[in-house]
Image (cartoon, rainbow, N blue to C red):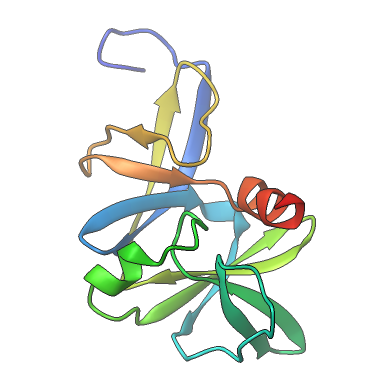
Length: 142
């Protein structure tokens, strides 16, 4: 139930994590594992949003420069260095999201489906929703 007593139309269970003084949320069921952060292998002529690739347990992971897949890297540069890589499954392969700390799992209700990059209020404060599938498709198309 929401504060108004109305049952939400949509709900998501999110893993919350921090980077650059911001809180982000990604659907918990998409996070396969959290790895210690390590520098990736560079991709010659790679997409600006991809920091490089990692290999873990025979899986190639495209490591994003920042959680939104924007490519500018402002979030990572302004923050303490990432300490974790959240490995997420998409239909196009695995992506790694840099994080300083994964801190909680919460379930939130919404009146409409969330879109990647949306900022929402939660009991943990404002958070930016991350949708790995949408980021992967945008990177492939861009």
